Amino acid sequence: MRRIEIGYGEYAGYSLREVPDAFLGALRDRFPLDAEKHDPGDSYMLLTTIAVHQELARRAQGGAVLPHIPTVQELAKDIVSKGFRQMSMTHHPDRKGEIETQKRLSAARDQLTEMCKAMKQEPARDSLVIDEDAVRGAGLPTAR
Image (cartoon, rainbow, N blue to C red; front, side):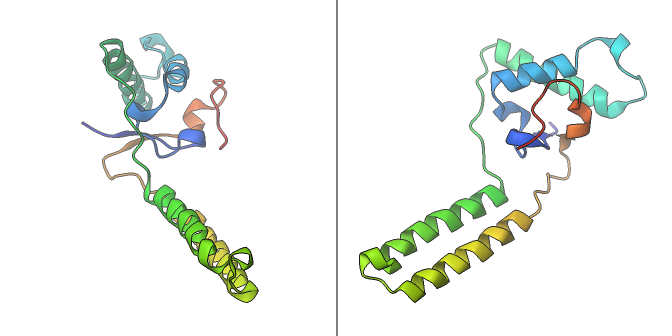
């Protein structure tokens, strides 16, 4: 089965199976299961509508929200953050470290954080991405 992925906002990079019920409900409202509301030639909208309603059916039959599997970018940001904290325990002046070393550590963290921001979150080749344009004007959150 094709992976359906959110491509915008707070849940960017999440699969449809990982989003909370409230967000899925908002997608249901944006992609109603009503043939009269869709352009028959728009396969993107058709596939998205089917995927949203398949996920709703899965959950209605007892399926749970799956835990989020972090993207490479999310993992990289976490590594930088936790690594900085760990290194600060040794190098911070309050822990008898050197001020200059802590400054360099902070500079390294800042550079690595910028590199993480620049990382592209490429969806898998066979993914269908629900993008911001598809949900604009539907009352869904569109900014992170």
